[in-house]
Image (cartoon, rainbow, N blue to C red; front, side, top):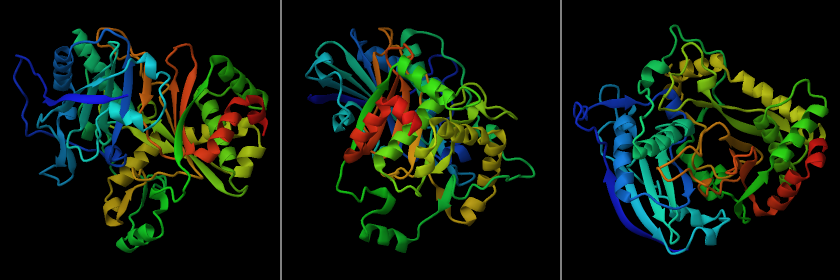
Length: 452
């Protein structure tokens, strides 16, 4: 598949003939929930059947959406008043790339999860733009729209809301209202009340220069594989019937209540990854689960249409023996308890701690490390089950396929609804190649996996 870039330009907000452009001196301070997240660009890829809308129509819709979601047209910088990192609302624009492919979409389906995917979206490496998009037109008339957005600006839910709004703007539909006041949403309490330990959870001690040098000399530490085996990215699919069977087995094993689809899937995948890795029985493995604060924070709640980050993480843990010798419902219970613990009180405690000055005084940095490429013995899972991935529509129909980009980060797992819309689930998993066959066999041997 040959991808050729035909054009690249900046698309800026179109404020129409209303009151003109707002002040370009405005800034949006990053909140503590923004700053604790991954400082990197994340890419999404959407595949569409023909016909494809014209570039002019797509650009015009993007400009209208940016007038509402103005953060994405800005740049990261410093708030002159506070000295903190902020989004500068300078309307510098989103990078819009047009490309063509010399093949039909049918000829490359099912698409291999390989570095080839990287050619379908702009790279965020070194990019000043907070959002970059690429439209690739295939020989059959089908097209791919891919976005690359800076995670410090928003979490997955808010970023996808902007992308869906772009489609609405192209169709001439009214855009949903958004909430831009970040500082007011996550203000610390007075007096602050830190009820939980956030050192070692969301924050860690920054490495010294000497420690960084030793890591390089010794082969890279957490940030490199340190292993000659390659990390491969694969998709495993679970039909609705398989999911029903898995949930039934989890309940039949002695659970007092039925588990959610996500909890059951996460427990099954955690156990299968642990089995595939062949960890020592007394080795502890932690499942890191992203938790959306929109459903947890109550006083005050996160406003509808909030555009920033509102995510922290739950961390259930167990030894490999505990996880594999006890039934599936035990892993489900570990996950359920850990998720329940990340409640309104936990989020408020985090906000109070992160706003207290302790992070700066102690030289702490986020544990969300974009350079970490190996998670073993741990697993990092992200659920996209409640994110409307297939609501994007540029006037010619919804995508027939959504994929995260190629990210060979060992131990990284994405759980998402299948494109069929029938309740099936697709799971994108990254593991060392030597572990992948055992993992896939475990995934599909549901009865055995539930009991071992």
